[in-house]
Length: 506
Image (tube, rainbow, N blue to C red; front, side, top):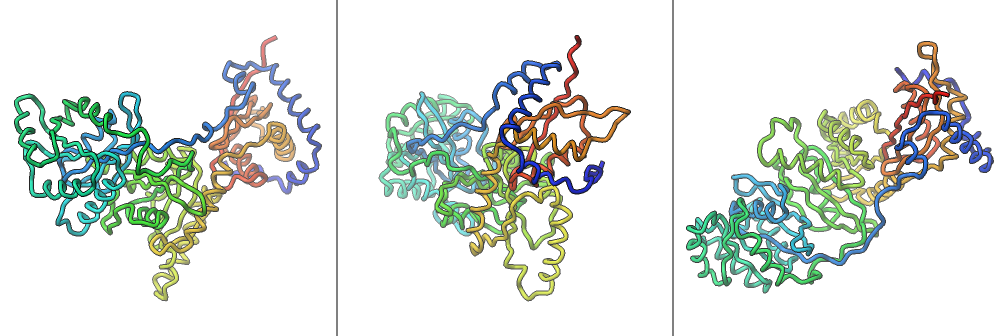
């Protein structure tokens, strides 16, 4: 049913609410609340009415965790070792060399000690193109670590590439653990002993896949690991967490690199270059933010294989960890079903939302094609993005950094409204006046009434309406829209839940 059914002309709601005496508002809400006692309420209702559920925990400033970097040439089992240490399938693992292309950080724990684990792409000394970028990432990871795990495939033995890595490690002066991987049983241990000649001390024979020897390796690492990182930046207490989402190749990695002011993520014209979420603390607009660049979401998840499949699953996980999502749209391409699916994913997760229209500068070339595109884009935004018209829009060029400064106010607005709370008295005054001006239509000779309303939680703002019957979806959307018009909810979804309650039997 269309929301227009409930329009009913000008209701002067804002004017009426502004004129209300606060004492009167509170006493009216108390009367409505008392009236609920005549209805059957359950324990959950009582809990909700006794006290509102708050948002997330307060901010805590933590010392920088010590950092362990895992390096080695491609396909020696670095990601399998990461998963074994974490105790969960987090890093992308595939029998294809070079699946991990960015350095990726994870929080890990052993014997009650927390540390950061950095997984890197395979290091190749004569790498060209993308492999050269991977090599640079590994070098940066070594620089920013307290301890390095150098993984070698013991069944293959040391190669000339491994010897290049040894030189790089010696130069770093960091404590290094030589990990002889793929030693699945005791009979293969002599293979590990052969690695003494690399000159990095005792090799630790492990099987990352089966877990053999990993506990002993971690015990030895803990002895060398400092309590507080000597190299990692101080973890700023609770920087707001931003997920950068978008279909492959829309410019997510370029945006992160421009924001970070360094080549932080491998950028390549090959779609889907970024496979793992990459966390990065970035200073933008005088504030610290934790950016997560995620793998481009592919269209049909069930048809994906290997790396892309796991990367997509983790994109959803990254969104769960984030507070606000920046959905990057490529203005040179029509808005696609994929783009809309990604936006729906954000709405389902209840995260705050900012839309970043990337490659904006291209629309202002003299090219006729670009001028046509500009006209079509506005029409697409009106039609396809009408359901998220409340999300702040930022027109940027991730490559040049144009208008990147406008991203910060948009993020701040979205997060502030994601945390917004409306006092119960005001919310009930709003509901009373709205229903008086626009009553719910009769359904089967009955008219459902709203008995009482309260904001159950923030992040996102979630409201609960106690009613005598089901409200039409169109009427609920109407309440939602008027809420947005009267209170500032730009950048955040609003959730309205109903609890239909029956009168107590006397």
